[in-house]
Length: 279
View 1 (cartoon, rainbow, N blue to C red):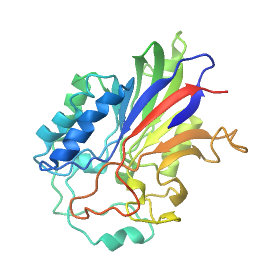
View 2: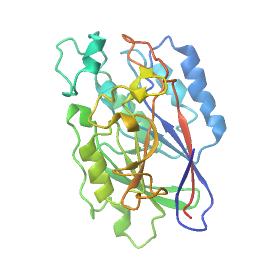
View 3: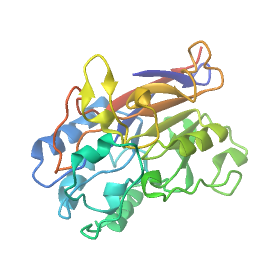
C-alpha cells in the first residue's frame, strides 16, 4: 500500500503496521506468520495494540515479535493489552457505541512487563507521549495516545522537550499513533500536523457484508473508514477536496477475541505501507 507523504526527492520508506493480534498461547500458526513478516524488510514497525488475549501469552507474543524488535519501532497500548477479554454477548457490538463497561471478571495482564520489553528493544512508548526515531537516514517525530476506548487518552502537549520538531534538525515525517481511532484523537493529531496517523481496534468490522462493508467500528469512527487507507477528516490528501485532510491508516488487525473467533468478509491482515515522495 503506497502513501505519497514524504518530502520531495526522498527514497521510499517501508512501515510494517501490526495491530490486534489478540494472541493466545496455542496459536502457533499466527506466531509463525507474524515472525515471517520480517521478510518484508520494513524500515520501521508500528504496533497499535491489543497484542494478546491470555494471561500466559507472553512467551508466544515475544516469540512472534522477536524479529521485529530488532527493527526501529513504536507502540501504543490497547484495552486488551491491559485486561484479558471475557465472554460477552456479541450482539452488543451491533448497538450504538457507548464505550466499554466495567466487568468484575476482568483479569489484568502483565502489560508493564510487555511495555518494558518493547522499550528495552529500543521501541518508543507512545502512550500519551511523543518521541523521535532516526530511521534509514530520516528523522521521524511521533505522537501517540493511550487507549481512547478506555478513556485513557491524554494528548501530549506540543513544544516540549520530547517534541522533535522544536529542535534544530529537520523532521522528515510526523506520525500519529493510537489504538482506537476515536474522532477526538484523530482531530487532535490533525491539529498537531501529523502527516500520517496509524490506528487499529476496529478489526475492520470483523463481520462485514459483501459489497457493503463493515457494520460497526466499536468506536465513533464511521464504518467507511473501518480499515484501509483514508483521509481524515475529508477525502485522502491526493484526492479532490482532500487538501485539509491528513492520511489515516486503520488496520483490520490479525485476531479476534477468543470468545468470538469469527471473521466474515474481513480477512485478518498486517500492512506494509510504502511511503513515497508526494507529487
